[in-house]
Length: 252
Image (cartoon, rainbow, N blue to C red):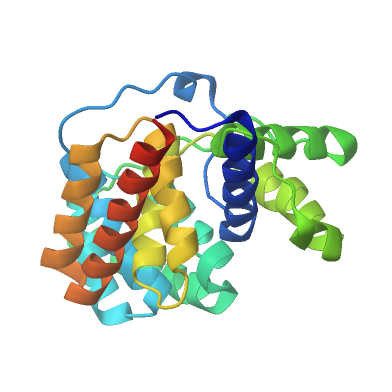
């Protein structure tokens, strides 16, 4: 049975509030406008998950090895920088800075061994400023959530709404040298590695589907967490995915 319009609006409002708190990391590149889901994660996509998880949890020892695997899987240096900068939105500046410092060490060690890693492109354009930045960030946030983000929390603390739109979804998510799917794989990996953010993790499972990641790919993400990170992170991700499937069925 299909839900009524009022129920649909309530669900969208609730989801939008969670998305705002979750601060989803993604960008608005034209090539990402109509992503196509595929059946499995590529080696590059798989490598993103433990890198993001270890950076967010502060496990620098295991991050070192994960960065090596990511570079060997042909993630570029600038893509890795984007992932590790993104960490600050979910785990804070200290974890992001420490992770970037470890990437510097990994790259230097590889250079000394004669390995020349692919740099990859920088963002194609500078971030907008002022009202244009607010407009860009609001559009990115709305596109990811599927509806304008509003709710009592943002009425209570309007500063966080402004910061999300102008800085997070504007300054950061306008950077177009890392695609939306990669950013969402990284975000889910980060949130799965952290306890106490289950509602945001579930929201990002929904966003991951919105950017074209299919059910099989998200199940594969959980398997990567199980094999390369830890069982608890995998459990959290699987539970979030299960709840998202249930919510999607309830909306049909």
